[in-house]
Image 1 (cartoon, rainbow, N blue to C red):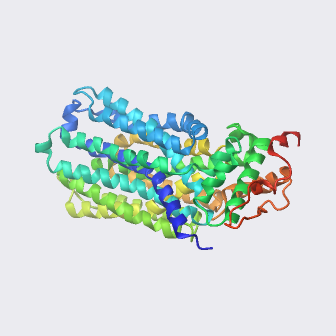
Image 2 (cartoon, one colour):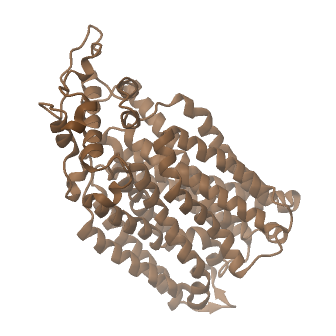
Image 3 (cartoon, rainbow, N blue to C red):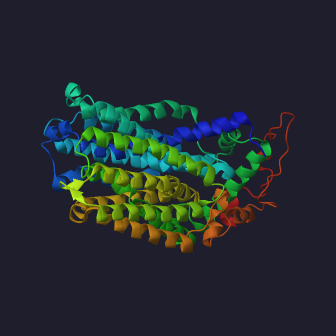
Length: 517
């Protein structure tokens, strides 16, 4: 069925506002890579180096991990997905000002801002993909979620080009050559905050909190074509939530109680940590350090980083047309093999070419840059976009927000650990360190081949079956005494809307009596 254009556009609009939360992550991930090469920033904070230099980078991840594991899930579940995105954006704005206006010589204040921004973005980055997955039809869910990773690249694009422009006028701007880059981070969260009041809350959240059928129905009617679609999905949601609450657990204890959820959690942990071990996280944080081995001109390095972010947007678009056509497993496997080949190529270039005056010649540097650009060609649509897509769609409603928050922050756990010792690793081994990334990518391909099931176009309420769990729709239908758990039986009025009360006529047993079942 072709979706009505007005509702299709609105569905995309709502999803893109939520995906804007990823711009915050992409922007912030690029900020430290920018400022670490800014002489004004270094002088402002007394030229931090060594462990202190690494601490500035990793404190963001520490804040995000704390938020993702202990704050983001409860916030999104109790207040709603929209409120969680709004709170995350608000904290990000406050934290940006804390960083930008940290007093001279007080790097501790800057670090505090990094922790706060990690907390804010940890909340927003949990609620955003959950929101997109819960309002988007299953047949286009992967395509829409691909824009989540694309918006990460948009954030990096903005940060790198703003930094490049400010870097060209360092003498004129002085300390504002780095402060302006940091302050610019408030733009996107302000835009998101202004649009959130115009978005519907997800129907699954309404049903989860008090079985609010009327509000869930109104929400679905804004993003679905026909009344039959609305009532079919509403029935599926109610069946799944009833089963999850009454048979498994209505709390986060289901994360450990249900074997199929434990299995999903472990697989998603590996995939999200693997996303950073591919090499992308480290390259995003330390590419300037790597390029310094070839170019001494900071303006050239800023331009390369900006072009990298620009191509990242173009390469991520490949996920839009491939993820729902070829599937998640295909992208994981092809992307992993391609990234391993790129890392091998970069390492061999480093080993087999001569060192000139303590560094590599410019032609060799260009070849290395080409290899790293080719790496993001494989990374962006696969382990970049698809990791988020797969993580956001595999968990049942009772644990979805908490599980997505925990899994997504495993990226930061891996990054904190690896980024702490990568500078030393790179200083001692140079481009030989890329053999580690090559090996990690090959191991990830093997892991996907044996352990990761395909989730392409599977409805959220039926994902559990792929992991050895029960079909929550069918089991919930049994609890509600529904004849056909996949289709609602409704009576329509002359306007094509369900008659008053008709939405629940297919349920013979009231939900509040189920505990006697």
